Length: 427
Image 1 (cartoon, one colour):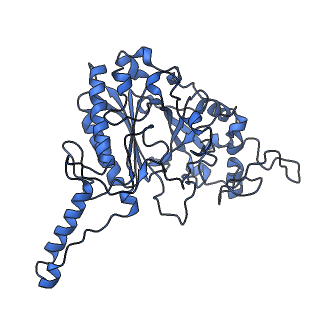
Image 2: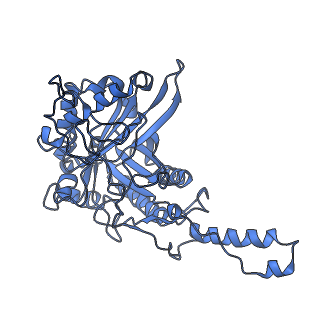
Image 3: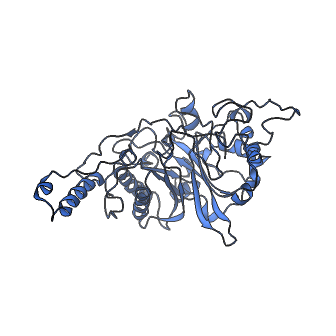
């Protein structure tokens, strides 16, 4: 789990807190909320005083959590630079037998139309379940990607990027192939669990006969507003997870995270590559460690994420600082030391994970950990060199286990009137 973090205090350009427009294509969820509020007030006062019943009905306003909206169309797909959301679903699909390029194009067209409407707080284009009818957009994002196998199934092998070559094997891997890879990948995030589930169900239904679910994973993060001030998220080990993430304000952020317009292939311009890993945390073993031992494994203080060499979370780590015995204050195998970009040829990635908990095993062990998601312009220069370094001696490795993996090409955002992947499928 490389030592980088999401800039929680940033409000992305694509996020707005404007009223959800009524597009004329159906009743919006917000409009339904207003209608329900008015109806409830009138019905509730039917036996009461006439003066109270005659008062104008006032719909309960949405909180900021519900009203926050991310736009679907843009230079990049949503769900990459936005703040961490409280709820997430990751789902991979395989095209069904007989489905090819034509069926894939129709599917991405349906998915894009659905994503645009749901992210605006509107009902799905057809057969809406009504699960989220009285909620706002809740920062919903829906992101689409293509796996290595997608290109062979659609006859587009010549358009498959070299950067999408399968990841190398790592010694820490204990991968379940049934929960890895896939032709198509969808990432759903929202700050409300029902909004996220509603989107998941709509996407699954839209797949129809063209694709079937290969695997699906559910995750969560802290709910916005649950802390007194914006801060780096904590993982299930209790650590601030992801300090030193690249920030959009960095001069080289775009170059590190997104494929340049001049890069290849052309359909990936302004896109990114997502590495997805299901990392199980061996929490029973971890929680037996003393606080000091946990901090030695990570290389940072648990309370505030500050490096063991001193300062606060944002202080540069002094890797040469020693104690009275002449030993490094930040151990040589500390996770935070090993993952530093300057120790990995400048390798950097934007981490945007979710925690997960899938119940308790028969022996009482929690099946819990991290749905690790990282974004980079080229995984061979981002994730791979860092993971190879971790493989050779990360102190954290004995407390985690990589159980599933996937690499997906996520094209740039769809322009108005376009669907995601159109430049690939119709180019």
